[in-house]
Length: 355
Image (cartoon, rainbow, N blue to C red; front, side, top):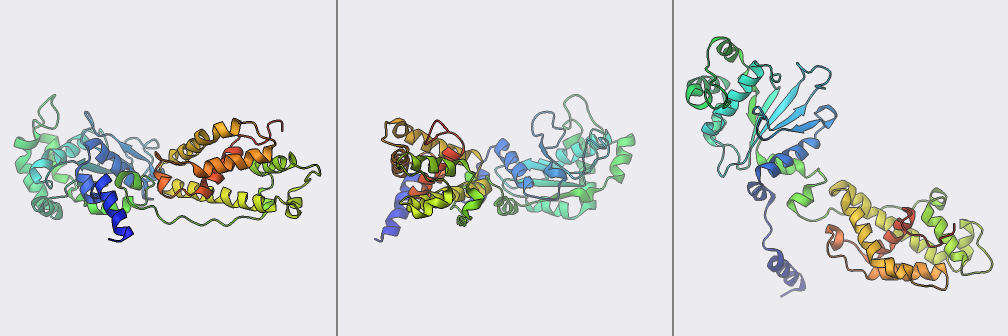
């Protein structure tokens, strides 16, 4: 057996066979399902300032997630919006699941609780059944059947406070209602497009994308950064002939360490960028906190000079085992060293205290 196969098998034993995203959706709670839809909509540029609102729950008036096309504050009675109705069922959605939902949007828009949505999308964790698909493809057939089903499926189900018979002005409104707004979106589309969202890996797992390699800028762009200034002061605690400027380091024994430090700083920055684009913001902050917790005792030890403190802390950081952070699989010793200098840059630690 190859080492690679042994590695794969050990992962399967410890974590089990990976669950495909399309199957993981079927296991989501209704709340998680709506939250996923909200995140998916955040990846789109269609909506006003990415203004997405989740209403699912009691009193939602038949609306789970609202995506605003225009600003509702500018015109509260006539804003444009799309409705995303999120259903978690163990089987594909059928017409019997949805007659009352269609009835709600007709009644509540008639009642002026909200404007008629531009689009009303049905999204089920197990997709849409064939019979319901056919209704959604034929708006006249959908309208005629909903009219037939109103008394049994809508009249006493839209609200538990009163009956809503389809008659009078409501019937007139019903007859003029645009049934073309009703359509569907398949879960596989949501999974594919949600991959752009930074929470995708946290929700569905998978491999990290390849990290972007950052070039190290010229020193003049960084020389005022705190970690650079602290390094210079640390070097000066070890020698009599003080280094006056960053450029003077080139001719000293510290040149190699200085260049390696800048490299490690930008390797840690690569992790920050990767996290920014693919994970919740707190993941990188938690990683820095893990490094801080791992090096703080060494940092507080007595050292002959501040440069020896720098090297002791870097060495301790490079040996740290990070178990609890999603970045543990791709965090290398050079990244951990660089995170020490990120902590300096954040003013969490100092190589020389009395600046």
